[in-house]
Length: 387
Image (cartoon, rainbow, N blue to C red; front, side, top):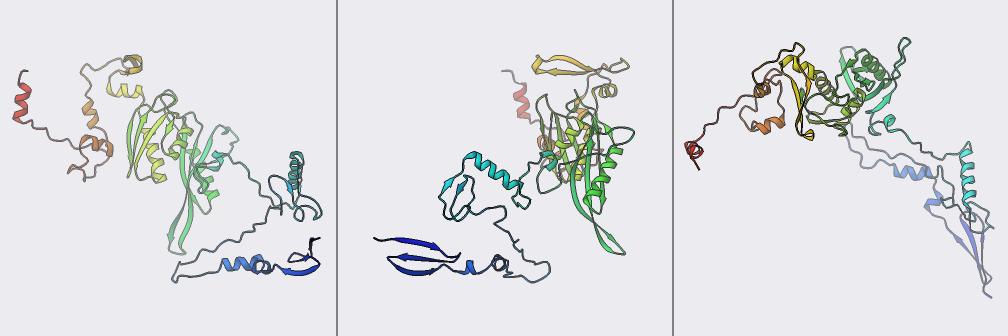
């Protein structure tokens, strides 16, 4: 009778007995002879190294693939003879209760190197895992007045440098921190220091000293649409109805939540540098007028016509002195007196390809007034003709 018997001698040798004849086999190769360090050394070898300054090659990091893994262990909980059970055993599968208890015992081991994944809150993590922007930092507690209702967010961390005549170029970190209570009180500041933690702390303390109150329409949005710029950053800010939400840059969304603005649309054009975005949006919040301030300045009643209410007039504010102007309000004159006109408005008004487009306007100037359009005689005769 033909009999096949296999006996394991060691890790690299086994004997096979077939019909009484013994034949020795050796399963030895390069991967069994060499250890992991030798193999990783061959992978991390610097080949084709370029010359010159700053031409370093990227070295591969050594990884231990066996960390946190047991030989033969899987999610299903199978028992394999020779791997995770005795060689004389049989292939079996643990019950769900036995598998759960086995996993608990593995976690309780002090020398266990199983990597555990912890869920991090999105507000604590920030906008993404690659930068500091959007991370929440707690403001300090004052002895006289509690500041627990305030939240502080780190908007940006940048590495800056300064040239000194004694030591040369000196590097430091610049942090931008915004602080607010979500009810109209808001502050933002910037500070530099040798490390990120101290720069964030200094910026947070400076922001708490620069708190300002921001007016909000119905405690949820801005009072009016605005066109604002700071250097080469342009913002078109639009008031939105209730339930619209925040549709703007992620840094502006964070600042809106600290102010208490719930419905807003902001279109940003030009440079999107974080410092320019913060200053431009802060400039817009401080430049807006309430309905009462506009009524006192213009001398007219501020009336709202809502199409959802069949354009029923709703008086929002009236002049405090109860004296209103009788002449009609000139909207075109008010439009020309705007301190800024953005790219979208220039394009809609026909100034995008105009020869005045190359001229830089100051903040106190409006767009150039175009010449009056000359109507051809043919069009005049057609207009005056009676049909």
